[in-house]
Image (tube, rainbow, N blue to C red; front, side, top):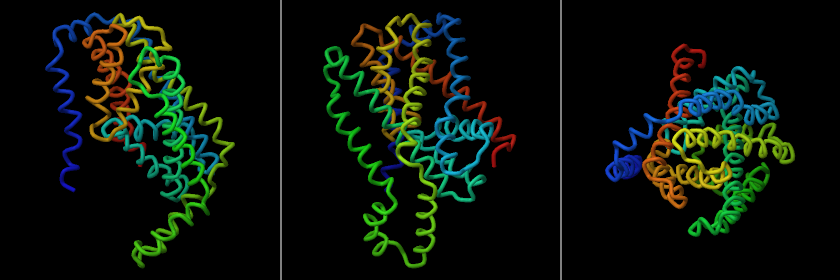
Length: 310
């Protein structure tokens, strides 16, 4: 539908609207006076994140018998997560990882399975963060419904458990396969389906990966925490763990590139509850985006143009 082409403009419009409401001179002053020491800590943590973040899906890949070397996994993560994820709504660019993993599994579907499992665990751990911290801070964030997030979390986990079974998925999709898949495509779809579920990790094996996802989110939010400190936002780290997951989840709505605009509106509202000015919050969001998003994306371009990645 033609109207879907304009969805990405919503975030841009929101971003421009925010700029029109802010004192831009104060934003520039905040950024100019940011504490360099804290920003250097953020740069260091971003480097650590580049090294550590692929570990969670690399473990899944090993369980799937996709023998990708960890050095290659770092490069693949830079390209798919930090570059293509940076320039697409909801970081949907990470699906390019499936193409890179095909070199190690001879199957695009198996690589796509890796992406789906990783994304499901990623979002589930994020929802759990929001639920736990939402309950703790429910008096300070009255409009936040931890109960609603809990329902969504349960539905997500239930769906993951249900569709992790090849037979259950096959039975539930049989009607669609028989009546809506063209005859000439049936064999190809069947082959892709079989490859998707080949060497599917057991649920108990993924429990550790789920916890690792939560640790990665803590590292991601630690980078924003130190950017906040550089701007004089002296809230305890646990407050960041309560507020940032909500902003991240809102940024997942696929109406803007990398959550631009929607994330800033949400964070300004959330941090405003604790007396943080819109200019400081906006400066924190933009500096975080530059250090943890734009810079790694530029590094990823180096590997892409160097043709280290096919």
